[in-house]
Length: 151
Image 1 (cartoon, helix red, strand yellow):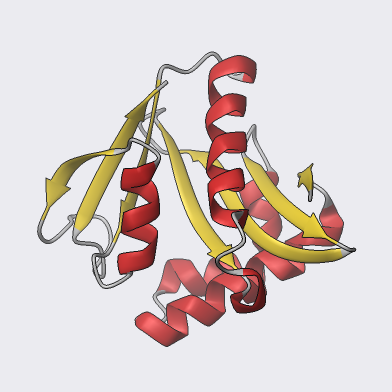
Image 2 (cartoon, rainbow, N blue to C red; image 1 turned 30 degrees about the horizontal axis):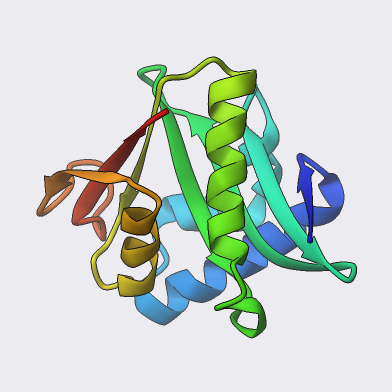
């Protein structure tokens, strides 16, 4: 498995993999459509898109982006269903955490999710993320859980 960061070849896969799970589990919000139409924004202004590539195919993606308050969010993680259960998500989490700590000098990152995505929540907890908020979220209509990781 190779990991690429901010490679334009991965931007369309980033958008496609994410819109697929969003449509499957939720409904597409305005911010989701913006991500789909312009995935490159997740790789601009110091933000990063990471892609796990197996045999020249994008197996999974995730972004690390700075929010309006200057905090860093792990967001838009998706693994192609045919690669699920092969450690792709865990590898992406490890890469993002290492990058955040070693390259950006961060001591904390956060994520916002929904408990309907039970597999993702299990992964986050296995990676030692801690729940910081449960219930309706003020920023995202579909979110009902927030977590953080101290690096």
